[in-house]
Image (cartoon, rainbow over all chains, first blue to last red):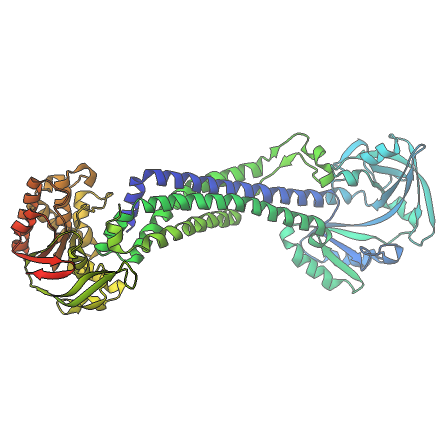
Length: 405
Length: 223
């Protein structure tokens, strides 16, 4: 049957070429499209985590829901000692965040003001490399303020200007100080750059009475795939009033958005596949219809219905295999190439800054498992496309088909 | 070898256009016979041939091929019976277009599991006999009608079936090719001792068979 199927493929060239081309395009598009979609999601996530959010963060329970000074971590050193014992943690830092009013001589803006550890922060976030003007913070930079470019723009301030801060200290007392704008940064995340400012932790703790306190402890793990395991270990070592959360929880909105985006992506490609599926099926059906007498003859001379099904299966299997064998390495190469050399669209991040896009690059994801299931779907659809023609041809009586005109 | 007992066959049974295609047919065809179902169009000759060939069912009666009751077999068993015990020759040749002459002739043998060497030897033998041995590598669509029909006969005879059923085999051939085909089939019948049953109204076939079974309106009227 296999040889006969091969001969049929070579003989009925129109159907064979059409099926080959459609299957090739389907497989190639599927691999490339999914690779691009997954790559974009991974990139969004990586960039988001890189900017400021850690892969794991430790909070006092209810800080994220209610907030306020009542929900600060009050013994940072104790937790840090436990973190030192856990493998897989690259580094960690304790941040103290508050919201207050920043004012220049002409403008005011409510902002997030955070005390960060200048020596640890560069390995945790993009704050230092996002420097645009001036300088990043140092442990001795005192009342230096490091602010996002869009916030500075709102304040109509420039480097060296005095910026006043009014807020509440960790003991809920009134806190106010005069800072000097030492540096500005741009991470690319518009909302972050328009509402965040940073001060060296040592100086800020004096002002906020926040020694050994933190809004949260930010942790960077060596391998993102180990995040759940490490999180479990951390949770086991901290007391019940403290919670350790992974990026999946911290960035739930983004994860949900990506899932929705994936669903729409798959719906889009499914519509494309339905069309391709029916085109392949129709060509298969037309081909089978033109061969009714041939199949009738085969049935008359002793081929069973099962053998006819096997013959048709081999035909679509061989065609699909050839197309997929060509499409897979090409698709995989495209996915790999663009995972290493992402497509760059100048101005894309600016255009989509409100959506959290912080890079002009569209990197692809190269994942052999994804490619495998992509081509499996194409295989499956092609095989399914021959079921109706199979049923159609086997619905004829052998003699009726053998005399079909 | 073939025993037909009280066979009746209806088309559109129970409908106003009901046709009684075979009426109480009782018949016996012995091994090695070279016989013909003859009669005008619509007399039931092809229907009877199809019933014997396990290609169509009957409404009542029994048909036996040797000890096997064909009419009682399920679809798979009928298919197997056709493959192993019967050969078919059709009016329109019905060769497999993608297979060359050699492959067409050896196709049934291959399905029945003969070895490649057995198939090759037998194909050569049959093809030589039917004078198509120079066309073994040709595709069917490059052959004349007469040659194609000889390939069909070769395919039917190659696996040495018990019986060959030929439905209007000369209908698409000119008289010269028809005569040649009938000569060859008669020779095969004698040489291979294979029963051959024709359904035809061609005078040339009537002149060349040894037994003529006449049908009219589905009934056997002369034997």
